[in-house]
Image (cartoon, rainbow, N blue to C red; front, side):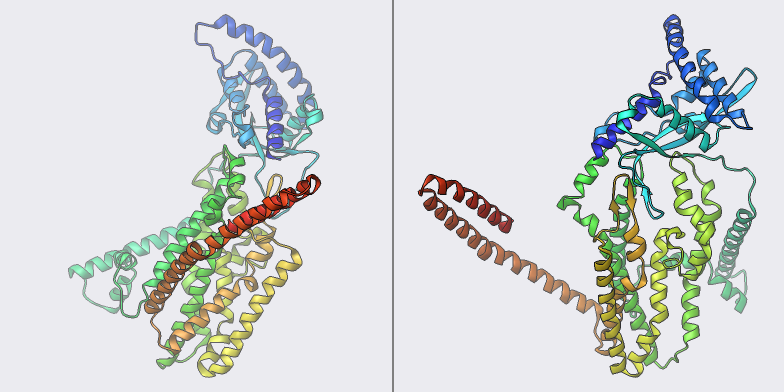
Length: 584
């Protein structure tokens, strides 16, 4: 499949650039006649083919695109250096297509920097990516899919629209004889839009807000410094402002002191789990970036060596367990210490702890992210982050983005915050009865556990989802499973309820987490060692003995008649194969 797509890519890139393959040649002062002869032979068919197509494709009330294309071709024939740069910046045939090097992004900076004048017409390069697919097997990408197929690039005059460039390339392919039997088509064209120098109202307000926060933190740090040096007297206002000091909060954040009420194993589990999750996301991002050996990636995914990456999705459940555990533990401990239960304050405290940080991140992504970088695939950030955040920022702040318009979620990874917050909303129905009426609370918790086990199983069976978050098709990454199963709260609730059960058990039986963890590790080490000894000294000899007996049986059967021997050989091979699979 991949080799055929790669072949299509080679044909398309050759068709689009067969007249431009040597466009980067320049006069070095020694080969003037050779280059001029080359231009004479090269420019005539180039002018004929492109000039014949351009009027019919870009003809509209705005003729600037046609005029700039005409000036570009004529400047190339006149050996203008800037014309060479525009044509040279487009994609060429790259090496390694058969190994999956199917994304040639050309030269982004060269395209944008190339500009010149010819016949009183100014031409500036405009960088565009072209998405390609096979016509006979074309799969229309769904709204939830991410395109990872063949990508090429073209550097066109800046006045041309995406539609005009797409029609021009389609027409060029239609006149290419190789494409008549290969069957490839353009899926779409995406051009880099220049960033406006003027700031929008949203950008200005975001900058003002971030600046105000930074100035407030700096002012509080100065107050803390003056208080420590004795330049400012102690007062309620100074003491309150000093608590926001960058120095105080920085030390608290980096402190390794273990206080009596802390459970140091929890941060350790979080750290290891987060490292694993980052590793998994890093591998996934490889599929979105230009990669020269995509074919090897798909082969690697079927090997055991990729297992540690592909099962990283289950580490997320660790954080749900921790969240449920800490909720039940802190709630039950506070209730037993005499504190009163205030549902409104409980929800308010949780909302205030999370929302300000999320709000700043959403504002930055919606209004300022597009100004911090650029590049040939930077438009992907506009599709995945910027536009969804501008459209659905309020859903993220209400923590319902995993249910409402989930295909356009702002910041894809914030689905976890939505699930965690929604589980927190229903947690009082469980933890408060666990404190007041333990038997009733355990019954409610048990009911939630059963429901959270049955519901995902039914959804998986009915929809026939696989166990992978991403499903790879011809040219897209299908995220149907991710949006319709993985990020939904009722499919992720079991781990959270298990955490609540562990927190209740720890409080009521007065267990120590460190001791429990050490006992668990000890049991696990002993179990692994015992299983290894059992396998080496008991199971493996039995398997070897069974294979020897089966081979002896095969030899006795082979001494029979010739027709029977051929049949028995087939059976023996099948049995031996089954034994080898069992031993493996």
